[in-house]
Image (cartoon, helix red, strand yellow):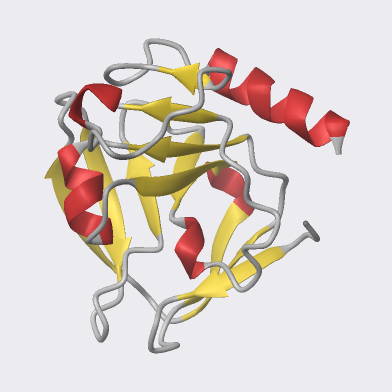
Length: 153
């Protein structure tokens, strides 16, 4: 992983940089992430909100209510519809980057799984990862697990 992390939407109208190391990488199995990703889960990279900057284009923002009841502002490209980042209103210090929009995804290795109560039964969830049936009450275990992972490589 080399900073700044760079990425963008599918059509190239939006480009961004992440100018600080991610705080954690995890999989979310909530039904909203399943819909957004058109898959069994969504991968999420927790980043410091102040480290995220658009370098090209201006996104539209869509407000959604998460399964937990939290309000999330989801940025998206008006042209192709890709949602590169979400900003939880309950925590103005972090944003959630959707890592499929990164230019380099080779370093991604999730350390946790959240909303496992809605996980597809055929998706294996490693027992040694951080696991939450719903939204984690505290993000610290996910952050600490990511720090341990980064130190080990």
